[in-house]
Image 1: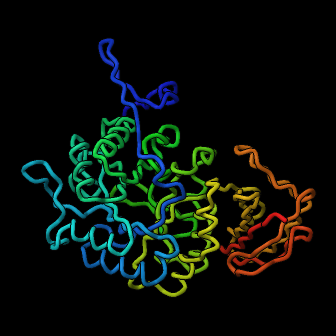
Image 2: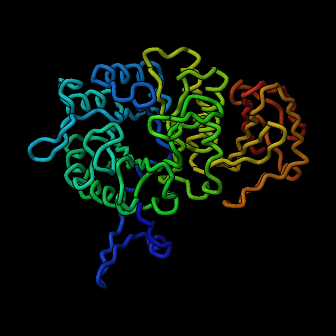
Length: 413
């Protein structure tokens, strides 16, 4: 891939290509204000890959509303790779697969909208998508008009088959195409973090992936031999990028990938996965089959207290405060001078939690915030148990099972 353009131009929020003394400057001007809290919804890829059709979408939309997920904040239904035919039409337009979507994509989008939900599609910056369908390279403005005419609300834009393409330029071009088409569409950059989008993507998109694909396991690496690449357990992704939390915030989120809740891990691991995505203000995009969803999975996905942590208007990504012998403490500043605290047991044995607030001083140096428990007291609420748990004048004590979490909200007194 071509070398990323220098930091001086990035600081100016523009990107340049040079030749024979001439400069072509592409300024970026995304639709602002479309994702002031991390987006919430559902994406088809984790469970269905390219095996998607209109029946699945309608059933998913129906369940999203009937189950209470929509009321909990899940409002995007995003069709990932595989929604289109293998070839463009004679005019170069994308063609929704007529076998998978016999009633037409417009009718399907109208159906989703009639449920009070929003609709998204997928494409790729390269010559073809990751699954071999038509990519957008060379068709950016034409495809943006196509999406606007369909009345979609969200575009996930991948990074396969992009040899020779400059990432900031490619994503800036599509961002500008969407703006020119005139329909506000959330722009989700799925660039995998290879070109450090947190350094340049704020004026381009509303969220950007920071890693390769997620895999439904606690802390594993799954190697794909056919493509010589890896997918990652959620705890590995959590640790993958250091010092990028300062780049995340309202309308410009670090995206740690879609949720694997309900996709084969234990309920305890699902609970921990959902908690940590809430703590780091990652988009909450479910990827399970709603038609087979257990009541335990639904309870995790719709936990209003954890969703409130994720959706907190302050929009600050949480961080690891301490780690000792497999027991980690993660913290997240919240609005109104409150905090969320999560204890995570990464080990394979039960751990004793004994957290003496008076001996702790939590500082967020990036955002100039602190919790000093010797000068300020907080009421404590256990968010998974949904009950009060005393205050910070007394140490918090408890037992924590393997791979489990305890999440507390500290409410300033």
